[in-house]
Image 1: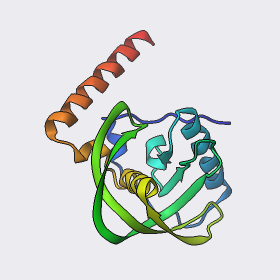
Image 2 (image 1 turned 45 degrees about the vertical axis):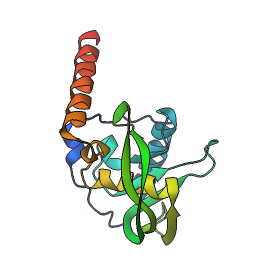
Image 3 (image 1 turned 180 degrees about the vertical axis):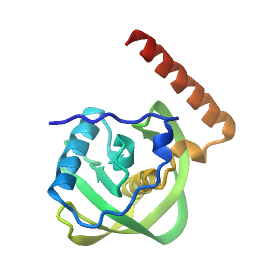
Length: 171
């Protein structure tokens, strides 16, 4: 079990665009295991490779209460099936302790590969649709705070920067 370091906002590495995975290797499968360990330990329900400073298009997710529904999305692509938007409160392991309402498409189709490189499609609604869009944003260098007003985003950034300074002094 390896727990990876989760980058925290406003770390500029979170803005890096992730590259597609050409071929899924044993190294990718190990990264996926480590990402699940990290996500469960945090605890969270989704984690993009960008958040652990690996800039490849890999997402892990588990929306279940008992960690029984792990999902892997490699090179995910999203198609909007219904243009209706849903407002849902979001948090993020890279923006710890903050939760804000974000509007996202509520019904979409995801095309991706699993940890074995096998292609699949998944129709997503509700929390699953929101979570996949949130994690896909990470792969594109975007964070949920980017959907907020400048004032809210600056307040969150300043609070986290202060926490990082205090943590650095104590280390």
